[in-house]
Image (cartoon, rainbow, N blue to C red):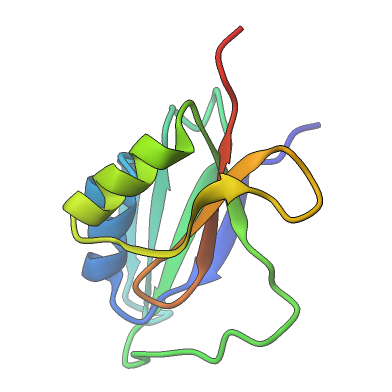
Length: 129
């Protein structure tokens, strides 16, 4: 077994695709409209879905925002340098909501960025061995 994808609902699909591809550097893996269901699915990720998990962006037509609730935490992305990643994200127009630095009570270097709908993306620094 393996994790295939995580689904999040988005209010503006084009803005979300732009964030995940242009700001976080993912690829648009596939996108399909479902006219009978009045929704569009777009899958983004760093590798082909046969190799790695993806994020499914679900856009329900006519819905432009959602309440995020308090049960969902964040999506984590591994980066080689959290400080440089934050600088690149800001340069590309992304919002860094917690600058890179050691996590509270630990030594792992982390940061958080917000996607267009307010979902938190955690950047976790992992140096190459």
